[in-house]
Length: 78
Image (cartoon, rainbow, N blue to C red; front, side):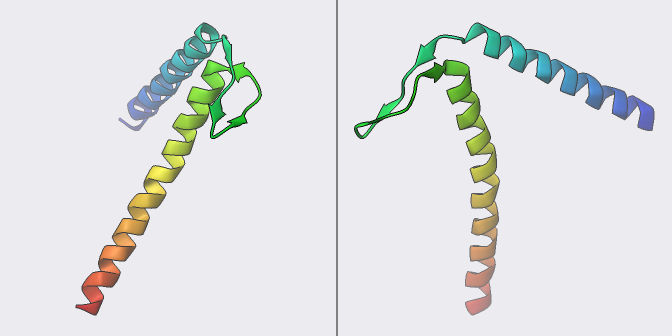
């Protein structure tokens, strides 16, 4: 059973890697991001999308942990 689980995890990682590779290869158009008058250097769309994804994957759990600690602190003071 343990080997089957490892095989499924390996298959999932392989499929996910293939999907990311296809996404990157299909989005090679260069764009320049402009925000509040500041212009970033031109880079492929895939780089910007993957950077936003990674930032969200990091910020989301951090906000969740902050919310848990804040709610615990509020309960302790009541």
